[in-house]
Each structure stands twice: as C-alpha cells, then as structure tokens.
Amino acid sequence: MASSFDKFQKRRLISSYFSVVLSVFLVLFLLGILGFFIINSRKLADNFREEIAMTVFFKNDANDTILKAFAKELKVAPFTKSFVYVSKEAAAKQHTDIIGEDFMTFLGTNPLQNSYDIHLKADYVEKDSIAKIEGQLHKNPMVADIVYDKQLVNLVNDNIKKVSLWILIISGFLTVVAVLLINSSLRLSIYSHRFIIKTMQMVGATKAFIRKPFVMRSVKLGMMGAGLAILALIGVLIYLETNFPSLGIFDDPLLVSIVLLLVFGLGILITWLSTYFATQRFLNLRTDDLY
Image (tube, rainbow, N blue to C red; front, side, top):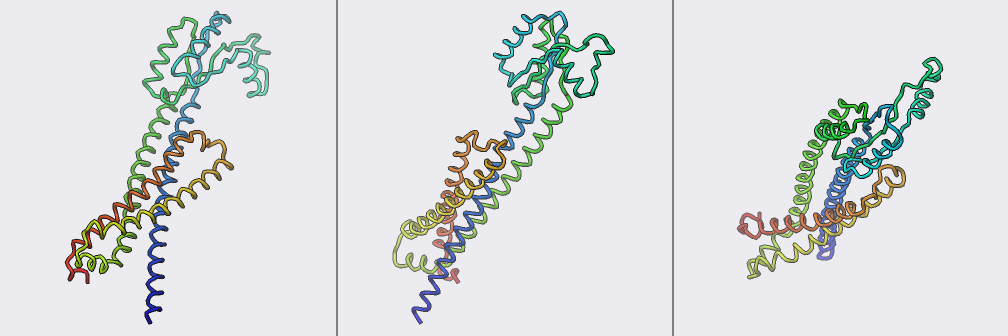
C-alpha cells in the first residue's frame, strides 16, 4: 500500500514539475518571439523609411566639378544613407526603357537634368528634418529642384507610430499574462506542499529555512524552462535566417544575445518572485485555513 502511494506521490510530483517547466518554456518562448519581432519591426520600419528617395536636380549650367563637389558634400553629410548620381543621358535611357520608344527622336533634344537620388538615414525621414535638409540643399545655386514624396513620408511616419503603440500595448498585456501563468503553475505546485510547510513551521523552522528549498527548486525549474525556450528561439532564428536572409536576423548579434539573456533572466526572476510570495502566503495562513 505504502509503495503504491509513494509511486502515486512521485508521479504527481513529476507531473507538477513538468507543468511548471512547460509553462515557463511556452511563456518565455512567446515573449522571446515578441522581443525579436519588436527589434525587427524597428529594423523593417527603418528600411522602409530609407527606401524613400529624395531627388536633387541640377541646372544645365552645372559642370562636372560642381557635381563632384556636391557628391563630396553628401559623403560627409550626417543625413546621407546612400546616394546615386543619375546623368541626364542615363535618365533618358531609363525613360526610353519604360515608355518603349525614344522620346528624343521627336523632341530633338534631351530635356532631362543631371540629378542625385539620395536615400536619407531613417532618423532624418521626418517632416521637419527633411524640410531642413531641403533648405540646406537649396542654398546651392546650381540646384534646380528637389523632389520627394511628402505624402508618403507623412503616411509612413503616422502608420509606424500607430503600429509601435499597439506593439507596446500587446507586449505589456502578454507580459502580464506570462507572469500570471507562471505564477499560477508555481502556486499550484506550492499548494500541494502546504501541509509540509505548516508542519515544518510548527516544529520551529524559520520562514527563511522553509522557503529556501522551494525557491531553489523553482529557480532550477525556471532555468530549465528558460534554457528550452532559448534553444527553441535559436532554432527559429536559424530557420528564418536560412529561408529569409533578407531579414538580416543575425546582423546585430549583440541585440540577439541581449534578448536571449533577458529570456533567461526572466525565467529566474519570475519563478523566484512567484515562489517567494506563494510560500509566504501559506506560511502566514492559520492551520485551520489550510483545509
């Protein structure tokens, strides 16, 4: 009879440990995925901003010396991500390829102008920043016109702000749910030992002495769950990098390492706090309230 009861208790204990590890693993895995999504959503937003080109057209009087001097200014300018020089001959060829016929045959001349297509850094793709850059470039007397899609700039920035706000709200909500799920699993685990806790307290054991083994065990389970979550996250990242290299998942290994360390740290912190307060609750209960 005793042997059968011991086996039952052992199975229940293993089941309790497994549920805690599984809860920690699933919650931290989802939080890790969310963390990487937030990082890469910022990267995607920046890439989208940097795809918006500003075209600077030059007057026909601008010679090669002036154009080369302008290129040197762009190289050292803090707002420049990249730039490409487009001669009026190259622009004419592009137009011919697009419309399918040579428009210069009936015009008799090339009406296009030499230009630079400038891609700004993401931080400068703002209404006020672009206006300042535009004013600065217009100081060059050889600049004929500056063209960029103002409506697209405003639309992109407005949508990015809205998406960022919703990501923060969802992140906060999921974090709260994660803490509650892990806390519930650990409280159930501690609940099954409430009589042992009260018995130890009745024979004179201090609260810290009673609490220590429960906290240590939960932290170990949290480390196991966090370790599994990190392995699963690394697997997902390798899969994405292999199948979608354009995302550049491993372009910033420091950020990837920080997210993985945060996942591991959260596993330890949440299990430690949850176990501490759960054991404290049963330590403060009267014996009659245990039933």
